[in-house]
Length: 126
Image (cartoon, rainbow, N blue to C red; front, side, top):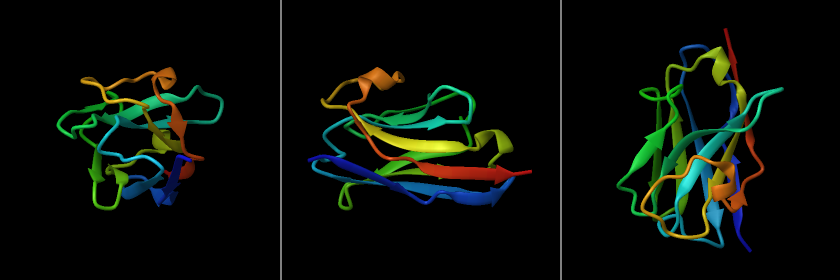
């Protein structure tokens, strides 16, 4: 059974930093593409960042490029999202997601991801 468990969310002031973690079980994060999505109140879930199974390619939404970094620790089977220079508009529930297969590109659509975590809340105060 595959489980993705996010942690690290919380309340932070604008300009601050936070790191989200996604601990995986039942799958190996170095074997599949992984992604982070977020959903703000009243908005649709949107792609934030992704990393290929090889770990050699990352991709970010324009809104977070240069501020967020996705990475992973294969030994811990965990994916991270380092978030710097946080803004109030980053407030959302953040979800970790995993694809089912290896692929050469990073997918940005929700339907391309098969496994999802329960989400962790990030609130950025102004």
